[in-house]
Length: 142
Image (cartoon, rainbow, N blue to C red; front, side, top):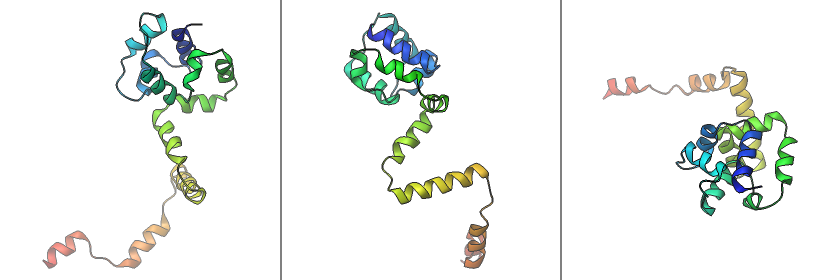
């Protein structure tokens, strides 16, 4: 299997168009370039393959070895495949790797609050107890 065929197979297994695939790769890349690679009309640089691999959590070696990784993509739950399609969610996952366990717990709590869209009553109470002058009140004093 050629390098371009491997790239096409990954893209298809993730359910992405060439345009969507290109948009998820860091840096500026045109979707027509992806098509040229897939058809074997153009060969990406090693740096480009690294960027593509990083975007989809695929080791660089995949582009040069057997089909075992493609088969493992079929085993991924659809939820995980959907995450791989969303650049912002990928960035969140990457950033969370650097968090300490207690900070990760805090992040999970924040995300649960955002998902449930519960009013932050404790925060409103704390603001009321502070009795701080507003910006307008400060301007009136000056």
